[in-house]
Image (cartoon, rainbow, N blue to C red):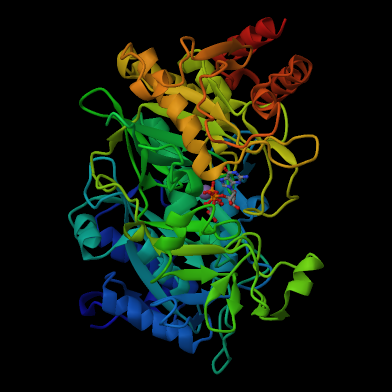
Length: 640
Ligand SMILES: Nc1nc2c(ncn2[C@@H]2O[C@H](COP(=O)(O)OP(=O)(O)OP(=O)(O)O)[C@@H](O)[C@H]2O)c(=O)[nH]1
Ligand SMILES: O=C([O-])CC(=O)C(=O)O
Ligand SMILES: [Mn+2]
């Protein structure tokens, strides 16, 4: 099979090159096959690729592209005995994470982007893009990738087309989304699609040799929320270049969701089964590199409990015909953080990427396998690091990492041993609890339950977290990351909160999810984590679902009764935390006083935090919903 579908394979002609790039004046969502090929022609006229290839998402096409990438030096095949069907990519050292300073929301009205986004006037941005994209694909092939976010044709799903000059992006999109003819058939039949243009921004002059990881120092990740368009330039890195993921499924989708009454969130989704066989679904929002993939693949240490994976990064939620809030995972793969992912912390992830995986910016072992900090307790005696340099444990002792802190694995969700049989149900799964989290060394308790939907939205709106390596910037710096959506919200963040209040109000109280906040990252005075985390987080999950049962009057579960506690929760100013004895810590080797320290709500620092919340809210002026201002007042009252 060829990587081209003959009907659509075509050379860009001079006549096309003369066409005015009217894609830049798109006002409404593009519809239908004619508009798809017209749009592709317009982009080609602007970017001037040597060749246009329409992708069909087949296995043969994938293999052809992989072979091409190996030949180009972008991918290094790993040892087929140790890691069948797997490859290592080393990016340019400057192209390793999302570029938030170069990410733009170009709504017509600046206030619709809000103070947390970089806004540019759409017209001015279009002019700028026209310049950088002009001829940007010269000497390269432009691939046309029709993709679906969510099961193809599902009631919560959406389709898009990404054109890209990066075969690495094509292969990755094939793992992360559903690519293929069925998607093109939907578009041919008139389904509206999100047009997404990507170029690495490295045109080749005739005869010029390519580099292994073409990219450009100038980068743009641009969204036009009203016309639902995406333009990305200069980067090959996941979150900047796989446009179905953050750009579409979060930034564009958050605008669609606001207009259409649903939710697009940076959330994992899991199915939890208690020892009595009761089933629950949790959706949890943590900022980048704060534990979503790990919670999504949790292997419970509590006997009798099961956790199954629905999604690890993005959820689309919508009220279903039965009145429950239903969630789908719009993705088809995982683009997971490698460092810290090991046999001890996340054995399910390790089993997932045992084959058919693309690793980016990890280290290479002498026997043709991969390694990174945390994969095994001890590093091999020799490695080639993520930049292709020799590395020994002595370098590690000097603080030189073998793998980039934001190195990643790209792998199909279907390979996960704990994937739920409902993970790709087009109708989604009914959500019982929503969890917000962040990386906080102090103040924020291990777990707290909101006093109601509005308080829960307040919790989500006020999350702060220490910055990680997933984006450029200073790692460890504390920043507000409301709903874990700070870098991903395509609308004014305060409007996102108002939208959550509306969605909650429209749900039947008996079916409305309970809202919680968690923090796996609280530290003791010696700077080490107080909570063991990972599989032990099942203990917190068990308390959460027991609280859900109680809120619904379903009565305590037998498993919670074994902890022998009548009152399961204690009211604190920030929410209900587990009452003494209510959190099952049996068999856990916690240091003396650790549990009290984990659940402590220090009033003085929370008063200071409330003042900071007021300052934060003030940045959004009168767009902050009155209900959230009232929640801040109520918090201050509880703090005394
Ligand atoms: N201490 C501790 N670390 C954790 C825990 N869960 C995850 N981590 C670490 O946090 C880092 C990121 O975890 P992930 O689960 O990949 O983060 P994510 O939220 O899926 O990140 P994105 O893909 O960037 O959105 C890894 O190094 C993990 O090992 C936990 O419970 N405790
Ligand atoms: O999008 C990416 O590059 C990876 C990711 O999940 C995040 O940063 O939250
Ligand atoms: Mn993410």
